[in-house]
Image (cartoon, rainbow, N blue to C red):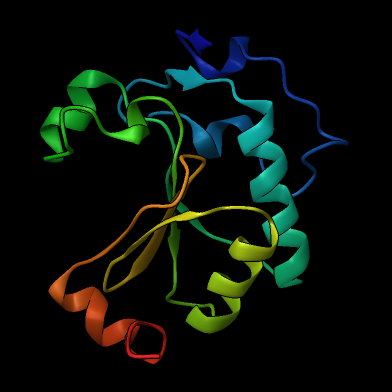
Length: 137
């Protein structure tokens, strides 16, 4: 369900203690997509990781998605998570996301894309360098 602003979205601070609704909302306008299953999965991944998880992008409104060059049918127009690897061990981040139940992964140079669709994987050229340990095994 889409909310015009994240402040309107029901947010359970006890269920998702390591995140805020704002972190998952569109950076352009604050629009938010409410998906408790996805939020449970990202919270589980954060718990498995045992430390901070930095969300670069969650939901994007159609305007913001087009502005950043997102695919017309991007999962970010609902909810997906681009997770920074700058202050996190990529192997541990990937393992935590797998344990949490994510099966779709996009491997980029500075972040890992995860969403709740069944089993898709892709890698950019820069992603192949960052994630080489995983993509060559």
